[in-house]
Length: 448
Figure 1 (cartoon, rainbow, N blue to C red):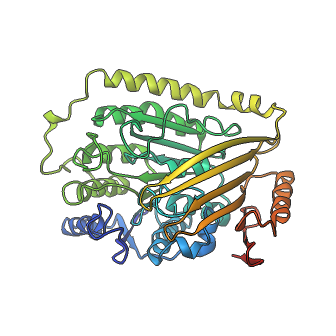
Figure 2 (tube, rainbow, N blue to C red; figure 1 turned 60 degrees about the vertical axis):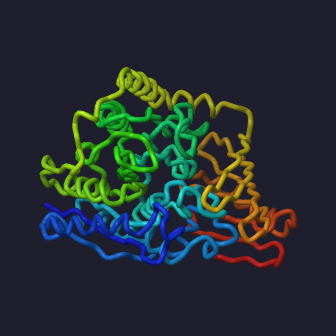
């Protein structure tokens, strides 16, 4: 049997503040416990050393304003790069699966990045997925986000990609940051049904979450047939987490991971630093490696306190039925949307960067193509913490764009060169793996 790959990167030199919940101790307590239990000495485990992502790996996913260097530290490159290390090990057949226990996290980071929101500057999972698509030709990917906070960044990045199934269960956005992830968020017009959200009521327990796994997530995966399953492994659904109000246990997480059987898991949230994270992380590792986890328990675990709220399971059953039906009618809805006479769908968004206190305005146009999922044109404006105000234009060509959309989008980039309405114009061409930006104030183009 191949081993499970494990990689630790606690990012000693990166913190939002010294006492912030997202700090290095999140990983250090886990590492100590796992070594004390002897898990790392078992033949089922193979440890890997951190790696370094390149700026072009970041630009393959993000429009960093004004550039990649301005939005990241070396810790971000190592966190994202470490996911790439395990991804390579998996694709090259060295391991049966892998768990990147890394920080800074990333699932709140969207296509455009003006700063840090939800503790995230860049999206580790999306960077890894696009790296794998480019290097190994993978196309169809499923992302299951198990963080208590809706993975709004990952959802936004893949909202219009029919080849990526994004599934998120989380505490209801009416009760918790970031206030999104509702059932009607089902994907863009040409990718309808490949975004599936399950907003759970506070205090949902193992019973409710595992019901959703068995009756929604597993059937979705079976029908979607992805080439790769990624677990965006947030662990703040735990009953002791200080930033949320759910009732999941370490045993629940281990059972979820055992049934889900992700190819690669990447750590996201989880802020019960001493009392929960070491047990949950150990449970995930044991489940992925096929090690018996039935005796794994938190010291303060009391089963009697973990009762499902009255009526909650019936509520979850109703949501599961509705979301499964939405997924199964996706081709019908997409075909109907392709019949529109409109060339573009236009929407407007306001995005708040809670960590950096930045307000962003976005105007987005999606090309409604009859042959592919189209391309995106994003106009974004925001004032950064240094007082600098940016107006930028971003052109994103997905890897599955048709030749006509590819040519049209590249033409847009050329047309906007020198347009003094925008400080920067960006081209993200995943087909050619080419990433360009023009500083219109200096008439200077950079190519990554």
